[in-house]
Image (cartoon, rainbow, N blue to C red):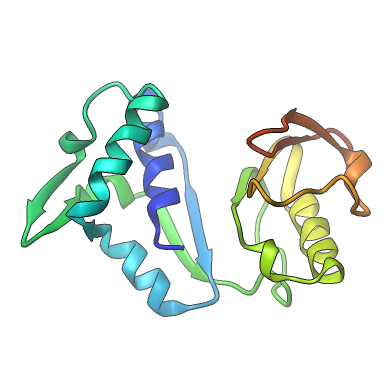
Length: 166
């Protein structure tokens, strides 16, 4: 993770006009990754693909309006990160620290064995409010896990699920 996911979410919320009303949490086990995410600074060469993705998902402006180019880097507007709490957290051993409407955890569980994946998915289930959403990586699934029956598939291609049972 490099923080681009939380930055994308912040841009989406800003464009929806609700950025100031939402609290985002970004977590990682590695504090160095968290520091990089807080900086919201990325190589400018990455921006071409990011701009294409932004357009593909129907962004309202140009992605360039959210950053300044400095020394070959895209430095994003710090206001985007004002409602983001960065937290060191271990998905496997860590405690559930909040309830959420949405949990995004893309392409992390592919590094875990099935038993650990099951434990993490149970924690995600507990962390979500009823009718909250879980988005996981394209190569990941929860159809086999202990809490599978407590989720409804919203988008199978994008691996988005809705919690329907506590």
